[in-house]
Amino acid sequence: MRTFEEIRRQPTVTAIELQRLKARPPPPPPPAPRDWSAVDAHDARQKTRKKKPYKPPTRPPMDVKGKYVLEDVIHSGSIRPVSCVRWSPTGRFLGIGSADAIGKLMRKNRDGRYEMALTFDAHEEGINDFQFSSDEHWCITASDDKTVRLWDVETGKSHRKFVGHQDYVFSCSIMDTNTIFCTGSFDETIKLWDPRCPEFIREIRAHSEAITGVQFEPNDGQVIVSGSYDGLTRLWDTASGSCLVTVYAEQAGLPAKQAPVSGVRYSRDGRNIIVSTHDTFLRMWQANSNPMRLAQVFEGSRSLRYNCNNGFHSPTNTSTEYVVSGQEDGCLMFFDSISGVLQHEFRAHTGVVLGMDDHPDQSVIATCSMDKNNIAKLWRYESHFAGEADPDRRPAPLVPPPPVSTHDSPGDKTTGTPQSCSPRSTGMDEG
Image 1 (cartoon, rainbow, N blue to C red):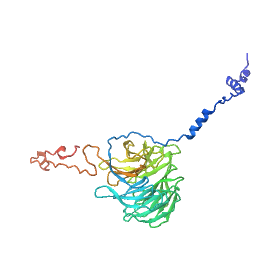
Image 2: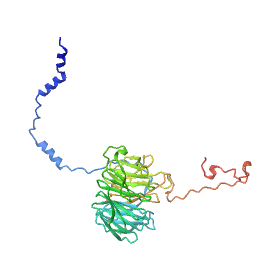
Image 3: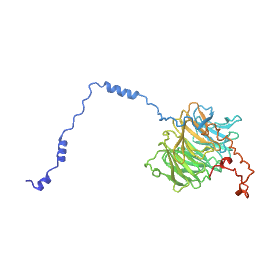
Image 4: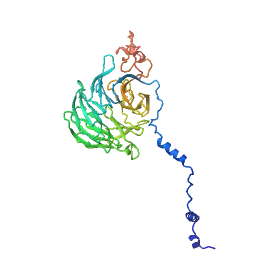
């Protein structure tokens, strides 16, 4: 009988099998083919094969009939696509910038259609952004020629040229007091400018990659929001230029490396910020909370390559606020800002939607895209109920007066209330 020491020293079956496998020689390589013509032909086909262009996924629109109807088609007359659209604060003008370095100011004529009033043609390369002053006396345009120009809205003359950026100027914003405007560039900096001085008054090294969006806080302009390809969204103090808040990926419950930010936009009351990224998501942050809190996530966006503009939209006569997102397949998506559910979707263009802006007073949205015909479109919200006119043009409902009764009830002699005064007769709801 073997002792315990002999059993302990005996190697296990696994170890023996491992030693046998190590001693076995490696298998020989597969034999080389006698005829290499098939392999050479396959390699030649791969080299000459043309790659198919990127085609974003398409889905059928949810609203076949749609709540948004095409009101007007604006022909810009440019030879390259329209890259940005912007309403003036009162809605009198519509600014259009195109990739052929020409900006145009559209004004509504007597027939209710928009026609060209002024042309801005001093830039050398394409226009990326268009902004109006709050008094509508002047406007600015940001361009790929690394400059920003200030224009007179009445005459169309270029009063000043602002030089200081080292790369494309992609976004701009004007403070409500018209004393300062800021620009964001692909040179990773934010610059603050005085409209009366051609040199910048402050430079903020904001991000580590190209900046895709900047905007002043709508109320008083004490804060600037910026977004960048480095995946970060930051808030900056306008007076000191210091960073107040940095939104990281972990705050949204995402992995450490989040997608590039393609655009940022404040709501009109300044409480929320919509941040669009190249990962099929839009995120709405509460700007007035400390720290910033994620209010809602909107899923389903189809903008993975282009910086499609997004924003807020509140149709008149409705209590719903939508988050509007332009898509690479030419569609507009409308998300409920509270529930985050996709409410409407329709195809607005045949190309990538590059820009959109909400009319300040009416239920109208202006859009532009990479369509071959180089046009901008105006979409008007129509009521959901059949037979009703547009909410902006529909007159207020008439409430019939209560019928006059000569007989008062015994308990109403002191007040004189008509006995036949019912909720149905007065047009009021019960309760």
